[in-house]
Image 1 (cartoon, rainbow, N blue to C red):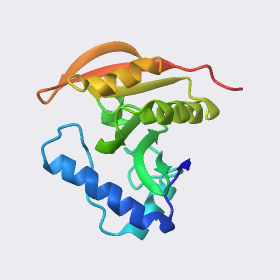
Image 2 (cartoon, helix red, strand yellow):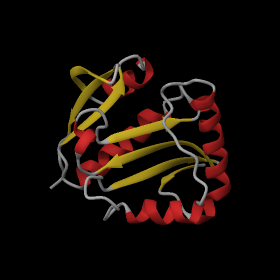
Image 3 (tube, rainbow, N blue to C red):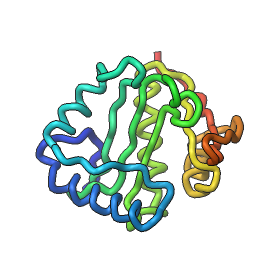
Image 4 (cartoon, rainbow, N blue to C red):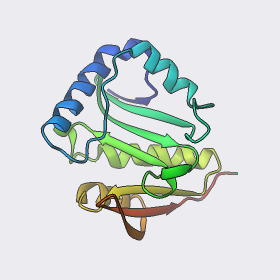
Length: 172
């Protein structure tokens, strides 16, 4: 059974399995994995819920992370940043996402991205910036399938980033 939602305290075991897989892939040298170890899960859940309305730093964006659960396991996540601040306006973008290696190529991220874009529409956000490393062809194809139009490629600290905009029809 599929469920897309925010993380809750009851999801600790599923989260730890997801996190372990992502950290192992990062340690194995996948340059596209950006994740950090969570050591205090209850504090992580509290902070993730609080960050929807306020942040700990005025330069950080409010955000919501949605997790794709499949039969009780987390197989992907997508982070929606509700405004562009600081580096988000150049190389971070509105959205960040990750899929477990064993679930890539199944269209889950295409589905999860469509879900996220609906959340932006509901909030009245009409343009969404998504940035991917230029070399990350699977991510770039996902963005393009969702309607992303390449604005430019920029270099930051020796890495090339592809910047895409998706124009949304905002619900009024």
